[in-house]
Amino acid sequence: MAAILRCCLLLAALAGLLLGNAAALPHHGPAKHDYRDALTKSILFFEGQRSGRLPPSQRVSWRRSSGLSDGSSVKVDLTGGYYDAGDNVKFGFPLAFSSTMLAWSVLEFGGMMKGELQHARDAVRWGADYLLKATAHPDTVYVQVGDAGKDHACWERPEDMDTPRTVYKVDPSTPGSDVAAETAAALAAASLVFRKSDPAYSSRLVARAKRVFEFADKHRGVYSAKLSSYVCPYYCSYSGYQDELLWGAAWLHRATKSPVYLSYIKVNGQLLGADEQDNTFGWDNKHAGARILLSKSFLVQKVGALQEYKAHADGFICSMVPGTPTDQTTYTRGGLLFKLSDSNMQYVTSSSFLLLTYAKYLVSAKKTVSCGGVAVTPQRLRAIARRQVDYLLGSNPMGMSYMVGYGAKYPKKLHHRASSLPSVAAHPGKIGCSQGFTGLYSGAANPNVHVGAVVGGPNQNDQFPDQRSDYEHSEPATYINAPLVGALAYLAHSSGQL
Image 1 (cartoon, helix red, strand yellow):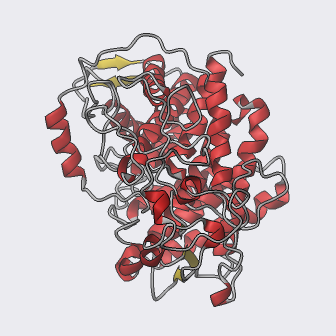
Image 2: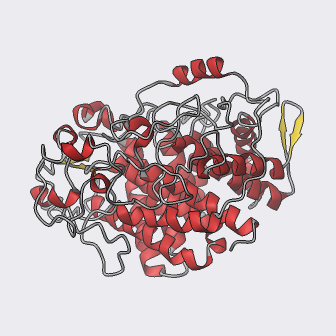
Image 3: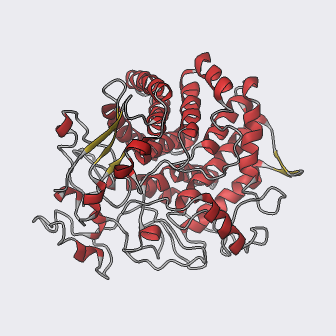
């Protein structure tokens, strides 16, 4: 099953009461991690998630081409893109968010990636190419390929898929401002990645982003309203569509510098929740990311009209600083930021990325943050983020890396179909729908090491059972890795490894 956001944020708040405040977190000493190696692997992971016809440059050899008829039922080429997690459905909402965060990672920290920059760009392009296909028709975004219920009733390699590849879309009669605006954000962010290296491709991306955003804004609604039986409970839009409209406009403002989008943000910002106190950033809720992104325009580009976003961004950042009057974040005893039990590591990586990115903007503007009267420096924000990444890489009570293939001890039983079943090279014959469940329930390690995959992570007690059936903790996802790419690039560079 795809990672599911089952709980509302009230449950996270309850968990916070149970776990206590983060001010007295123990520190496990200075971590010695090879961030450069982790960066290489975090990008490689995306090749293992590819759908479509794999290129000659494919490095993950246990995967083969798959989903080659995707879209044929509606006479649209929807091949390519990424499987979001451990199943074989292409969910457009998390796919677009992962694409946006990959692009943002490259934009902020690509200059530090050196030899990995081209691999990172390749990962961005693989997602962007698919989103161009998914938006080929005006006023339409194809948002999912695959019947999730029937897909989850099987345990199959993507190369063997025989479940329906049903196509779902949003259009004027079935609006989906959330998924459409996120798609626009991804296209706009990717256009910036290729502005210098491939200007023609960049122009195509930004032109499409404008068109898709206009559709998202004109035909407002959450995509899970009319598509509920197909996208829920996997990727329902719990936070509404307002955050995506603000996020999409923010990315188009950055990509185009057009006064049209600045005006849109000024007029609609409050209506779209600019100052809401929601402090969870992930595939569903983009408010925090939009605040950080827009704060750059004020801090770095000196766009005075966006001054309020510095205050909004400060509010989110201060919520994660232990020991300040504004601290609202729960940490485990071992020091891990803890938001929700299901795929918690996605919030660890996304929050770490935002901390490092905001620190970069603050340094550029020679500013600090005041958290309830306590001055917090960019250096402190970087230390908080580094502590989270170090925990992920093995500086934790279990001494376990939550990135597959990194370190001496890491998860061996991923909730991931392709990784848990013999590769086509090792077993050329088809493995049927029900036959594959022997792989799900096997006690053996996955035969294919999905290098770079970051799993959902430990529970609130810092424990990780490493059970394949435990998708909440053992399933990797593109939206866990995407923001981590940028964080690792910064940490590798700042540690002198790049």
